[in-house]
Length: 235
Image 1 (cartoon, rainbow, N blue to C red):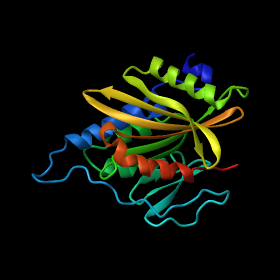
Image 2: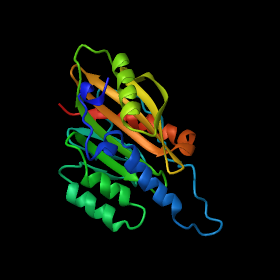
Image 3: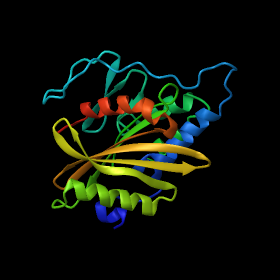
Image 4: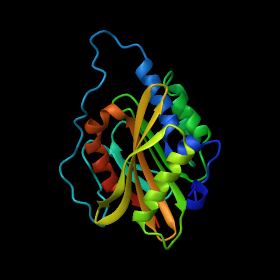
C-alpha cells in the first residue's frame, strides 16, 4: 500500500509529512557548529513536571511547560520551544527561524514547503534538538488503528529512502488506543529518530511526531511521553 492509499500525499514538502529530512537538516547543522572546548553538548533536561494523570479536562498550568496552539490542536511542550500554528503564524515563524541564524535552514525550508495538512509545527534545537509536528489525514473508516499503523509504516519506508522501522504497534494515551511507530532516518551519516503517535477517529487520523537525534532517544523519551498525554484535538 502507498501513502496516497492511506489518504497521504507525497509532494515538494514530503519531508515535513514524516518530519524526518527537514529535522535532520536542522539537527545536523546544529551539531556541525563549532563548540568551545569543554562545552557540554548534551545535557539531560530536568523539566518533567510532577506526575499528572490525563483527564477529560486539559491542564491549565504545568510548571516549566507551555501550551502551544496549532490549527484545531494544542499541545504542551517545555518552555523554550518555538512555533505552533503553521498557518496563522507562518510569517512570524518564518521570521523567527530566519533570524535564528546558521543551523535553522531546515526549519525555514520545512515551513516554506509545508503541506496543506500540516496542523502544528514547533521546534527547539539548542537543548532538546527536537522538532514536533502534527499532520491530519483521511483514512478508511473501517480500518482499525492497529492495522493502519502497520500500513502507514510500510508506506513511509517504501516511499522515503533512508527510513527504517525500529518498532510499531499501539499504545495507551489517556485511556485511548493509538498507533505508535518509531522510525530512524539515516542521511549523510547522521541518524534522526522519529516517534509518531497516530490518533484515529473514524475516517480521520492525526499524526503527532517528535524527531530528534537518535542517540538522545533514552534521554528525551520521558519528555515525549509526557507531552503526548497533553495532546488535544479541537472539535
